[in-house]
Amino acid sequence: MAASFEELGLSRELLKAVADLGFEEPSPIQILAIPPLLTGRDAVGQAQTGTGKTAAFGLPLLERTTESKGVQALVLCPTRELAIQVSEELSKLAAYRRSIFILPIYGGQPIERQIRALAKGAQVVVGTPGRVIDHLQRGTLRLDGTRMVVLDEADEMLDMGFREDIELILAQSPEDCQKVLFSATMPQPIRDLSKRFLREPEMLTIAHKMLTVPAIEQLYYEVRPYQKMDALCRVLDSEGFRKALVFCATKRNVDEITVHLQQRGYQADGLHGDLNQTQRDRVMGRFRSDGLEILVATDVAARGIDVDDVDAVINYDIPHDVEGYVHRIGRTGRAGRVGRAFTFVTVREQYKIREITRYTKARITQGQLPTLRDVHNIRTSKLLEEVRSTLAEGALDRWRLLVEDFQAENFPEGEAVARDMAAALLKLLMQRDFGAQEAVSESDPLAVPPRPAFDDGPRNREQRPRRRESGPMSRLHLNVGRTHGATPRALVGAITGESGISGQSIGAIDIRNAFSVVEVAAELAEGVLVTLNKGVFISGVRISAKMDEGPDPAPRRAFKPGPRRQPSAKFKKPRGSTTGRKQFEQSQDV
Ligand code: AMP
Image 1 (cartoon, rainbow, N blue to C red):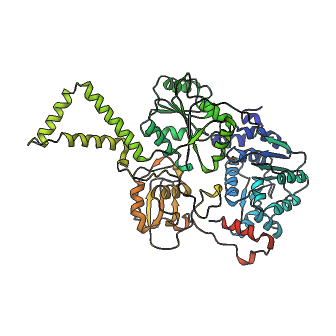
Image 2: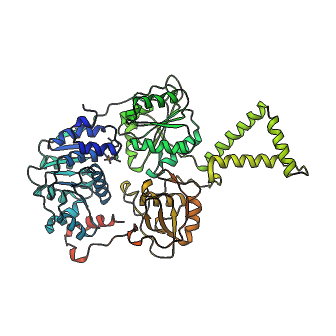
Image 3: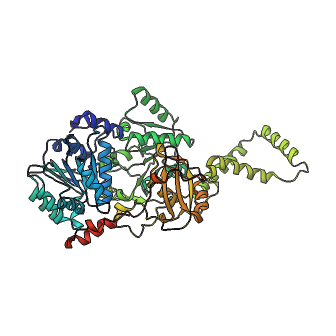
């Protein structure tokens, strides 16, 4: 079986885009799906989100799409969020195929804009079934030139009542067009659909073996994607490993995490496929000889690692499959030593933990991330322990003289200030270590906030909250911008997650290259500022926030979250049976 993207038969443009994204090797579903899909065969793939399934169908889809105008490929997704996500991923993969235009279409967005974009000749449409049917009935979308139709998360679409719409769309697609169906589960209705519309489909299923994992302590933490960096630091700060291996999915993550850890004073370095042999040897040599505490690596780069005394493996990104997990955590607990494994899991990836447990019978316990107070207490105890052993070692004469001079100069009356001086030194050292976090709050800012009321399931948990209705707003200036990778979602997530304010209290967000300006309800702004300046990281950057006193920088370009306009009455089509579903699609538009 092919093991590299090159061997899968992809063009130079797509290989370049894949390399830019930092993917080092294809995931199992990609290895399985890409070659048959490239030949134009119909296929049924059993894969969940997080397995790399979007690129598994997306790369062949782009490969088979030409520059000529008009819809050549259609991807159907159950929700607006997934349609946007898939279209974003396809756009990244098509970075070097600039003449291919990828258009997401979904309920709740003004239809005129979609009509204009379709008229311009978009080649790839990613849409929700209801809105696709709307366009088909208006004649603004034609499928006669379509060469590939993909049903993504087909079981979800059927569960949501889209069966009739999907059948209509498949029936309107050209007879000889390639049809691909991806589904996490294969219930009878999915098999019926496949039997009716697909021609001798290739079955793409990853076979799992039962695997044995080493008998080591395994924990997982539920985190939001933007919290991972902070969560990693909490785990490292509280555990103080001598030698830890951090695994992530892409080269980009390796670089980001390494730099971040180095900035925090860790002896850390990274290993990925872009390093030459000499560089790899140097990093490995330092890790082996205890010159490094933390090695950050991709799976590919870690393959050659042969180190016996790794205390812990941290899965910063959960691996694509069970085999990957077993392989990774086998790096610790070797040669009779104690080892531990920690895995960060986002809400959407929780099924992976269940799958790993099912195929390994391992006990993977959900852990609570240490609070800032926990980390602080651990660090203080360690520091005091060091003081105790330094006292026991003696040889303090030189230092005692300095203290006596200091005392004579500052407290000539000879007050008993020894205890206060020791306290001041301890405070100083802890503040140097922790920065402004010395004032520790009772709450755990990394706790995953409860599911919001409008949430209809895991897919929506990272949605933008509704916009605040009214009231005076203050503008906060944050030192992260586009160049740091700041996004509205990351900013809102960090602000609401850390300060506990609701998303409704956040107004317009304007992200510039080097900074961002975020509107926050005026009465809460001071509190948010204090919290953000306590040592919050967004996109790996420690936040420095201040009131933005200047004029509104560019109101028109600001990202304005909140309910979009509903389609005008003129375009509302009375289709009795779909009313409920349509309302669902529109209710997604928050
Ligand atoms: P999906 O299953 O399509 O939702 O993909 C889950 C995540 O994995 C997305 O963020 C992808 O960008 C990423 N991804 C897809 N393929 C790979 C790969 N071969 N290596 C690393 N990350 C990948």
